Length: 169
Image 1 (cartoon, rainbow, N blue to C red):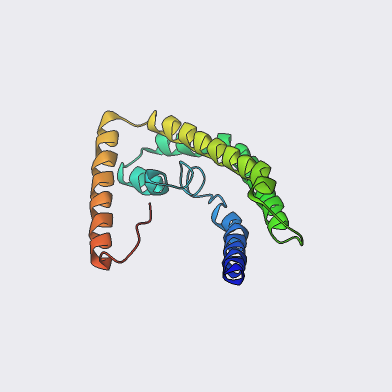
Image 2 (image 1 turned 90 degrees about the vertical axis):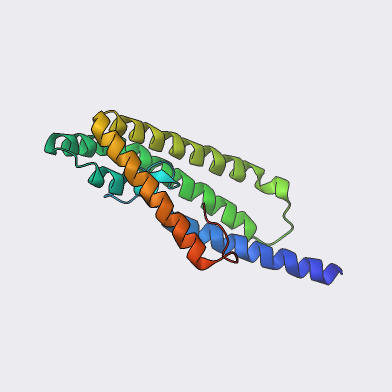
């Protein structure tokens, strides 16, 4: 029984380490997408923001404003992502160091990672709100319509995969 528990712990630690090792590459900001991974911390509508903006038919002036908003926030995103990578590296170093390790040993790193992710989400929200502020009511309505259509398509795709496919939200 102890051997099985130990094996599960080793496998779990290994998988967590791989996840932490690959996570920074997913967290890289893309220059053509607003915010981290497309906006609000890379989740939900934030990922679709560029597509929604394209569908809203921005004017030349609005496109320039969006670019300026992105330029204004780029340094903050870079700094936060750099700090996040460092915190994840510290956690990975602890995970793969020799010796005993308990959950409490990782609490400072987990808290730092959580704090940085929250800051990224807040910065992404600021970006999205600033961009939203330059849209006309008609453009907002069009973006809302496109968002609904995309949600419908995602639902159809989930249905195609069937009930055995886990949800990814």
